[in-house]
Length: 210
Ligand SMILES: Cc1cc2nc3c(=O)[nH]c(=O)nc-3n(C[C@H](O)[C@H](O)[C@H](O)COP(=O)(O)O)c2cc1C
Image 1: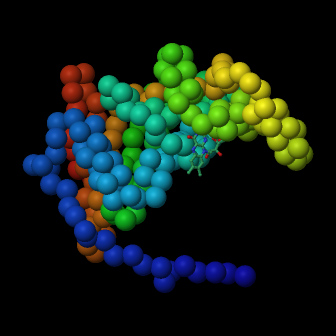
Image 2: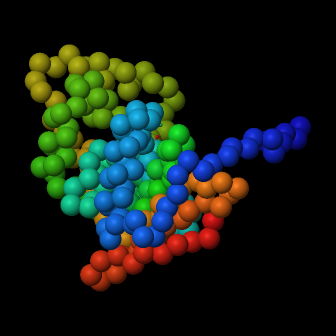
């Protein structure tokens, strides 16, 4: 049965981007947009699509941005997961934020590398014990028949008296951006798209047709 979604039409035009107002560093604009998303309590404002690619096949999933340190974007995951294995083979990734209430999209591309273990430890101890147990218990991305074993391991971990330690297979990645695109929805589909490409000394600013 054919289904059409042609009737879904959203109009944009809340805001605009002007080259003259753009900061030299895209991270400054990213922080402004991110802070506005937080201030307005946009749901899952720190959720981003992480795309990896190996053997010419891309794959995407959502992860949470947990920190920005010296211009590097940090998220946490299982290093043995599908994404972890793919990053191991090809560290070049893309990140995508979509804040529909603000009619904004940000695309970021760059290389990812494992976070220093001390920083992963620091974040791991800050998490609730339940989240720590889940991170330890789940061999993320492994196929299973049902959840019985996972729940057993999880419950055993929760019962232990000791603090839970971060396992070596779980930790952070930091993405070093080389490219940004800031997209702001415009009236009549005449959207603004401002790009930043990393050069030796700074960033080159450009504009793309919508
Ligand atoms: C809102 C949201 C937030 C998520 N945050 C994370 C996260 O921070 N880290 C993570 O490993 N998975 C997170 N996930 C789960 C991933 O999308 C994905 O299912 C999981 O990481 C396995 O992906 P993979 O098999 O491609 O490695 C999140 C999912 C959603 C919907």
